[in-house]
Image: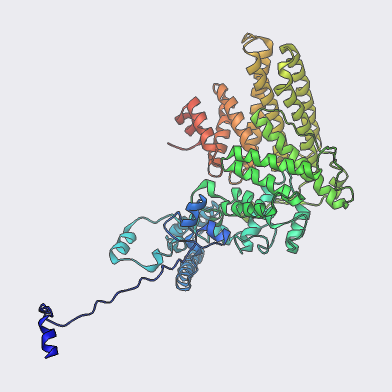
Length: 601
């Protein structure tokens, strides 16, 4: 009875669904696996949220979020990528060998001439009948496969010239660095000793000989030894050198972002920044060298103001360390002969760099010259040899004595004259008459001419072609040109256009620009335009601006074209060149510049 009463109060159930009953299963989504972290997160050793950029960490820190697909180390993806690469290069090698067996010498010479021209891998593959798509540049997503439709479309397209940024290129396969140094324990960016040796070889061929900051022999000895507690070679200094050397390399590994000029060496620079922050501003010889090099990396990336601030930081560290004339007790009085030599080179290198930047900014260099001397006695015992790497991979060059000590001493002498000129132009000019200014300029012009005659008399003609000695002549002519350009701007409001002083200053300035053009032509004819020392940029730009005022002269036309070729070549490596070219085009016309540089618009 009790159960019957309870049933009366129960609600009527709705009819159930017909057919089999299926249970809805709730799927718990698993967290997404991140196969590749961005470069900033890798270097900071922090967790990355993955694609799409920017990741969460980079968004918070306002860092540039860059993903490199070639670093995707999942076993299946990496194995498939390596298999595709090996298959590609195996097919290309077999096609090349088959072509070399051709009995037709005319066709064989044609192939060899094409290879000597340093073309892309696809260009070589096309002429020998090999594969024309480099799979090493395909991302890990692409290696997973696609639809038949997309595959058929890809097969019908023209060959893609994408091997410029593949991880293995023909240039890298054939590369023999001048020096062999290890990647570890010096950098966390790469463990590729071949790449590090390549970059170090570039740095000591095209950069350091011109304005020496480190002692080449001592640095290489300590880097090969692998001792990170060395006072002459530290991870911070090595990564700064690698960032600087990346400006001269076309290896795909030096690009943080493929085809982006400003990304050359960015990963090495970020590593150097991280190591510098860890130093907390400590003044040491290697730290000073690293900070100064980092300042020029920033400048080369088009960040001139940040570069100037970092150079000032390096100068302050050097002053605190006692490298310049100062009232403080010098800490290196008890140092070894080797330490004193290295510190002297560094001190004068910083003094020279500071003077170069001051001249560009048209301001007085407030830095006093170093208290140490560059001994001429070391020039006899200096056994360092020089050859134009990486041209040595393709052509036979006789290695020559580099004469680095002599070049450094001559550049220091030239800088002392330049600093005196800066004092005249940017400080005393407001306190003296135009007549006295002109007389003082003539005295400096005579000093520069004497310096140049002494340089030419102490060297063989063939030795003067080496980049660091060509740079000395170019800097001397650039100093003359800058001085008389300033005088013309200062005198023109007060002097008539046909006055003897104005006419003579104009002739001297034009002659100096032509001398620079002749040096550049000689340099190009000997070494080409692949590696151009970054220190030449301002001289190239200023001489180009002077030569374009005299294009009615046939000699000036030819030398103007020479400077234009250099500008176009440097545009591939330095971001600030684009602005310089735009200015020149606004003065002579884009078509005129294009014809002079030798390309069609």
